[in-house]
Each structure stands twice: as C-alpha cells, then as structure tokens.
Length: 205
Image (cartoon, rainbow, N blue to C red; front, side):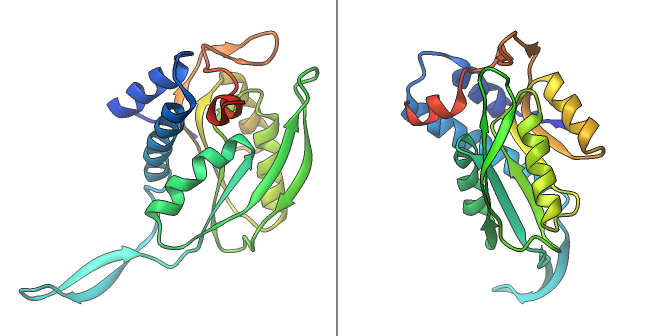
C-alpha cells in the first residue's frame, strides 16, 4: 500500500531539500510545496456528493466534498512542517499532536505528548517528513487507532524501505504516501541518501 509521488515538481523539490547548501528559509518553502503535492495525492479518494448550483448562465449540478471530517496529526516536531498545506487547501480540518522523541543511541521512540481531537468517523492523516526505522510512525498510528481512527493514512516526504516494512508489519494495509523512497538506513538509522535531520534543517537548529 505504498504510493510514491510521481510529479516533476516533487523531484525538483526533493533534490533541493537534499542539498546541504539549501538555507532554512528555502528549505521551508520547498517542504511546503512538496507537502501540498502530498496532501493532494493522499486525499485523491475523498468522497464527493452532488450539489445543485446556479451558474451565471444556467442551473448546474456539480460535486463537492462530502462532510467527512479531516484530521491531520503531525509527529512533533518535524511533522509540523507538513501541516500548513492541509490547512490551506481543505475548508474544515482539525489538528492533533503526537510527541515522539527518538533516542539517538537506540533509535527507539518514546512518547512525551499526545493531544488529539475526536477521531471517530474522521479521515485521519499522520504526517512525519522522515520514515526511517518506522518505529515512530507505527507508534503514532497505534495511538490514533486507540483514539478511534479507522484506516489512518501515513504521509511522509522521504522513506527508507526498512521503515515502510516496519509500518506494514505492525499495521498491515496502511496507505503510505511518500515523495521519495530512498535506498537504505545507515548504521545510525539515518536514511541514505536522505536529507539529514529534517527538523534541524527546517528550523535552522
């Protein structure tokens, strides 16, 4: 259930995100652009309903989004960089937060914060720029499921095969939308070729 974004603008943006000379301001702009493409692609199957309207020339029956609430849940802190595209293109969306911190020695994530709106009956998107080992993503998916989410989607910018496999192992059938599927993890569990620490580069820390 892996969907890799296929768009020239995504390839362009990923290349500049990878470039170590890209400054934080440009990095944020590129992250927004690619987040917008991912938000559109991940919501391709949203339900529509008929709506009767009057154009300047005649009556017309068009189609609009059905009223299924959308919830976007960033994994803090880097996931915050992927929230704004969802807020900008959808009329009604709620935001929840999951705080997971990765231990750099063990590469395992521990939870330090969880604040979620009601998720029952909602279309839920867990967003995190980097899918490395898959531990944080799988843990976040488990948390939103415990709070009522059914079939939550995972949206990432760069993923490693190991992370995809781990999410599929713990949450079979999960839709995973990524802009790039990279080669592998290194011995420190960083994605190769990757783009470094997304949060540090996003916020200039």
